[in-house]
Image (tube, rainbow, N blue to C red):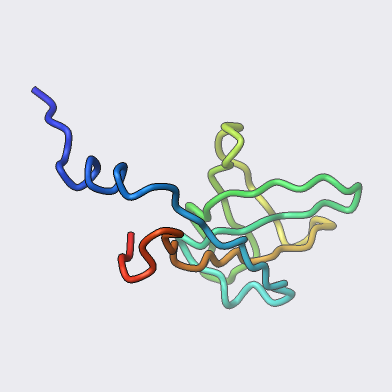
Length: 102
């Protein structure tokens, strides 16, 4: 049977957690991308889709990402009219207990 971790109960008693806003870095050259990177793909028509890179071709001309919005897996080609930004999140810091890392 599933038992809840005692660490979750301790964290719940400590109060709210503040998470830093994501930092986006434009990646015009896809050679820096790799599997597991969080990215946001902006299409020319203004729609943005974010997700995690699942697979990337050896020549970095195409990658597949698992979308965060539940849309499944999407293929992105370098020939498409898109811009790609890598998303990096800072570590979470607690408001009430700054010495404690989550």
